Image 1 (cartoon, one colour):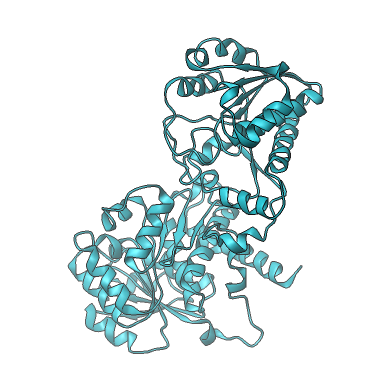
Image 2: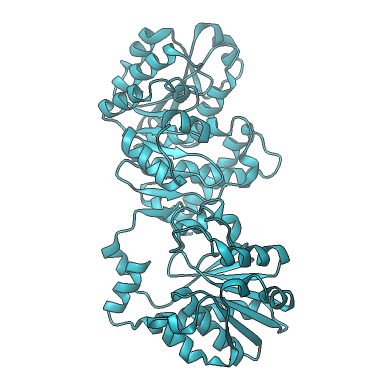
Length: 494
């Protein structure tokens, strides 16, 4: 965002004009939050976030509201556009608050406020809040005064969504130009409240020079890759997924994956089953085909048929050395592959072996770990979720889907997407097996790895919303039907 500001300014937009538009957007949002009027306390930091607050305060006074402004620093320490904004505001509403006063006299002012505008720190904060500032933030949260945050709630990292010591719990947030990762990643996402993105005059073409690599996972990101129905298409042109299932005591997970792969559009799906599980699976399968397979020799023999272009292994397969050998056998065949659950856990003691096989495969590979599986595969990868997923993808050579309420998808080239449409009732047994199956079904249709992973995660979230509260994993594949129908309508322009 700093670079976007600088490019806009270099293109002829004065910085103070950008700040004026930002402050005016904040004022409009604040006025909507107290339609009957009231007392507004604007808390301003020493940087440009505070400058936005000064302009918002001036505009709110012009609207007839009672406004009081508090600064964290002496006014003489302000610089640049923030100083200009302070001077334009006028001193009549401003009082300087610093040191012990933050914890002291502001408590009474907070108790009388109908709305607090948090213009302390924006998305660029890179160190934990401490001392009087942290005390102030704790007081705001404790008193539960409605808060409108400018850009991002103070104390939330714009890069990672992590809480830096303490953070404002906002009812609403106004940000500018584009959302930041901290708006979408937990725990920061819970602190933002309702988010409004305001256009302040930054031209969109600055992105041509910035070339962002982080995206929100929406259809606009990948719709050009989505494998919509073709008039002359047939089942053989839509790919053939092989799901390798486990023993008779753990057959359900693979069936969930297989059904999801078929529903996601794969032309054919075969469940490759060990002999002891064939009868159980046969009692449940209809459109999904069944093949008896024994050991790695059976895997190699089955995949000798090159029409079987995509493999899913892991759900209910079993954990151990034999699974490691089976995964490596699959990867040596050079098929598009999704690895989930047991296929990941089996490599906990030797993840580098898995990564070497992935790199040698030459085909797209998607890994779908939850946090526990991720920690076992990538024990040395630390930091925020976005950075961790990027590093894991680069190191492993695979597209990595790090699952959770804010699932992050990353490719080895550094591209990353943050998902935001997953409802909480997706947290149920078998849900991840369905996600893995959707991803496999898309890979089978020739969708590139990163795009297939993003599509799968989004479709999974939409299906969860369609199925609604109380869903179980078996509900998800049928719920894909209206979701896919809506995508067809979107592509046809209806």
